[in-house]
Amino acid sequence: MTVISIAVIGITAALLATQLKTAKGEYGIYLAMAAGLAICFYSAAKLETVAETFAKIKSCIRINSVYLDTLFKMVGIACIAEFASGICKDAGYGSLGNQIEIFGKLSILAVSMPILLALLETVQRFLS
Image (tube, rainbow, N blue to C red; front, top):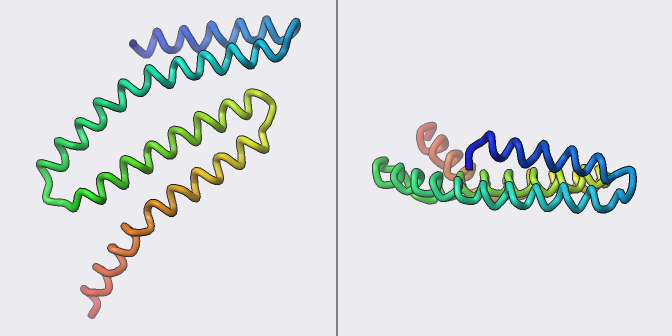
């Protein structure tokens, strides 16, 4: 799917959800969620390309694969948290969406801690 197709799906769903909001508000939310999930599944195909590229980068560069794997996890966490937060905010639950964003940020921080520790150990070795 091209970006134009995804944009058309999103705009169409938004317009239909706006029309449905006056009659049955919950149907508009369901329609927006369905369109969001469809776009998410189409995005998953793009993630396959990104994963293949990461594998090629790992084979070309002499770097610990843990670093690139962690980077890939961080990108995944950010995308999932942003998607879930957006759905909650669109449904009118902004505080729940904000909590999901905070949890996503904390999860990224937790995943990145081993890299931060390795960096600090490297700096400490150079200073000693």
